[in-house]
Image 1: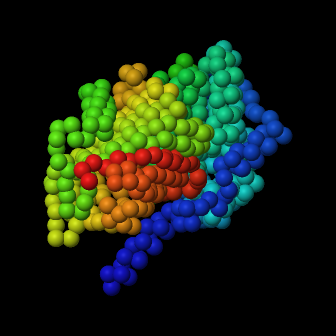
Image 2: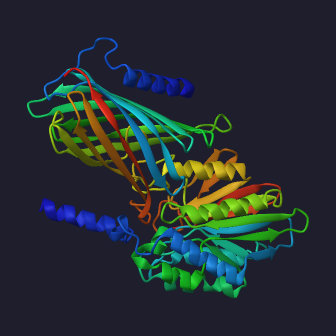
Image 3: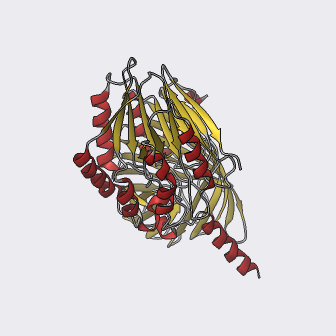
Length: 287
Length: 240
C-alpha cells in the first residue's frame, strides 16, 4: 500500500508538469552550441528587425511560461484578447518561453496566438526548457526559427532601444552565444537609450518559489552579471521560476516574471512601458 | 559583516591548513584518522572560463574525539579565490558516528568584482565507508557595494559519498555527489559529481587526486555539460 502510494505520488508529481525525465541527464534537443548555430544561420538569412514606433513612450507586452495544453489555453486566450484590445501598444510582443506543458502541443500554442500575427503584431520569442523536452527543439524551430537574436525599436525623439534574446533553456549560454552577446553589446555601447536582455532562465534565487528549479551555475551567473553591468544593460527579463522577483545588481535590474500558466498561484502577464525609464505593470489573469 | 566573514574564513582556513599541529592538539581516533595537509595543482575547463588552472591547499584536522575540522583554500587563474571552513562536532555511535556541520565559505570572483559568503548547517552520519549529510545554507552575493547584497536563503546543502577502503588503507577511492566541495558551494539543484583517490607513497606521504564534474540543467532545465576541474597533489599525514 505504502509503495503504491509512493509510486502514485511520484507519477503525479512528474505529470504535474509533464517532465521529460530523460532530460534530467541528457538533452534530446541537442546542445546549446548546435541550437545557437542554427539560430545564427537563420539570422544570417533573414537579418534583424528594426521596428519604428510613433511615440517616444511605448508599451511592450511580455508573457512567460504559458504551459498550454489542448484544454489549458484559457489564460493564453485572455492575454491574446487583452493585447488585441490595446490598439496603441507597440506592434510586437515578447515571450520568454515554456509555451507548452507536454510534447506535441506546440501547434496548440501557435494556433492560439495566431490572432496576434493576423493583427500584424510581431512575436519575439525565446525558447524555454519545456519547449526543448522530448526532443522538440526542431518543432519549436520550425515555427519560431531563432532563439538568439536582437531587434531594435526606433522612437521619433528618444533614439533607439535594443532588445536581445538569449537562449538559456539548458542553464548555460554556451561559449559561442556568450561570445556573440559580448560582441553585440560592445558594439552597441552608446548607441541605444535602453538595452533589454530577455531569456527564459532567471538569474537569482532569492526565494524557493520553485525549490526544484535550477538555473545557471554560479560561475556563469557571475560572469553574465558582470558582463551585463559593464555593457550598460538596463534590464534583464527572465521567467522559469513562476514567481515574480526584482533584483538590482551591478546597476542592472533583473525582473523575473509571473507565469501565465493556468492554475498557477498568480498567473498573469506584464506590460513594460519604455520612455525616459522602464516601468513594469503586472496584469493578473483572473481565474 | 561580510568583510569580516571573508577574512575570518580565509585566515582560519589558511592557518589551519598550514599549521595543523601548531597548538599541539593531538589527532584522534577510532577509525585511524590523523591530521592531514594536502597541496594540489588544479586544472579544469568549463563553458564560462574555458581552460583554467590554479592551486589548492586543504587540511583535515580530527582535533578531538568529538570534533573534526576541514578546510580548503583555492586560487584559480580565472581570477577566483575561495576558502571553506567546516566544523564538525561528532557523536560516536555503536555503528559509525553522527555529526553536525557548520560550514563557512567565501568566494572571491575578483575578475567580476563579485564576492559571495555562505553559511550552512547540516547533520549527517558516516562510517568507515559511507557518509551522508544534509542541511540548509544561506548565501550572500555582493558586488563591492554598488548594490545591496543579494541573499539566497534556505537552499539545501548536501553530500553523499562512498569510500572504498578504510581511511588508513594504502590506497583509496571516494565517489559521490554533493552541491559543495572544499572549493565551492553551488546552488542545491546544481550537483557536483566527484571522485577522489589517494595512493600511499611512504609512511606519511600520499599521492592524491580529485575530479569534479559539473553538469548544468539537471533539475528542471535541459541537462547539459558544463565543465570539470581536476587536482593532483601530495598529502602529508601527521602522527603515524
